[in-house]
Picture 1 (cartoon, protein in one colour):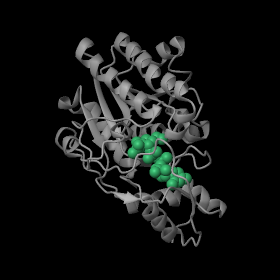
Picture 2 (picture 1 turned 180 degrees about the horizontal axis):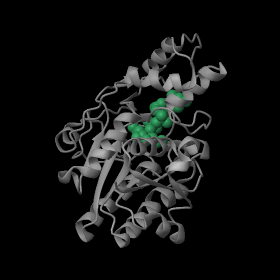
Picture 3 (picture 1 turned 135 degrees about the vertical axis):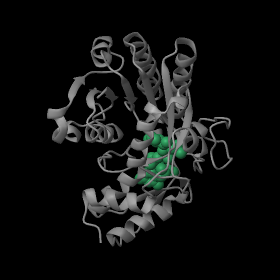
Length: 311
Ligand code: UD1
């Protein structure tokens, strides 16, 4: 049994990882400042984990959090491209400086490996598809810049100090416990909110922008492998499903699964929005033996079932 620290463990991906680790009889500690994460996300597991409440940039909380830890899953972040467009300094502080603080503390504490939640947003304006890790990054938002800066810090900490790090570029993760109420939430949870409240979903732009939506179980598998596959140390990997669908098609699928007759309301495109995104996952297949098991439609079913009865 090893001790895992999950930063952002009360958030959407973090709380999924906590359950994933508990199911494998691992010991789990969570560091969360509950800014976007929710205590309810941990209610059913709280007797089995240790929770440190605090911020990545609070040295006292951070040193308590990393003490004695074997592996770190670093999910804590302020997500949302539009939120970062409104508050660029806040995004940098949490996503870039927060990661640097965690790397310093992890190095001091002798952590064996840190797996970092990076983002497909780093590819930004680069028009080439599918996205390959060696491609030029062209961030379009402060969020993407901060995620990329933190990724470089991870690589440099591996090179300079020998702290084993792995960066996983998540492609539009979705699943249960993704906050459906926040306007900054991912599109799948925004569409669920529309279904639950019987209000028309909002589609930004024409809805022909495409994404590689990735069910959270696939992301959990990738994190676990990234911790334990020897050849992954120091690496950067795309984590997606290689399936590209438009936002319009996403709504059509979700409407069909819930028999919703709601018609989308179209509004202006979001600034900082990436036009198209789909992952090439050859590197993760090779080094992490990553093989996404839950495809989009099945992932959507599981997510919807968490909130609403699905036909
Ligand atoms: C981006 C990143 C993703 C990251 C996430 C963090 C890319 C390709 N992906 O996601 O890796 O984890 O930020 O927040 O950069 N949309 C609507 N209606 C809505 C909400 C969104 O039409 O109510 C549209 C958006 O304009 C966008 C797409 O749906 O084109 C997906 O948006 P969202 O789920 O917010 O994620 P990204 O910004 O793509």
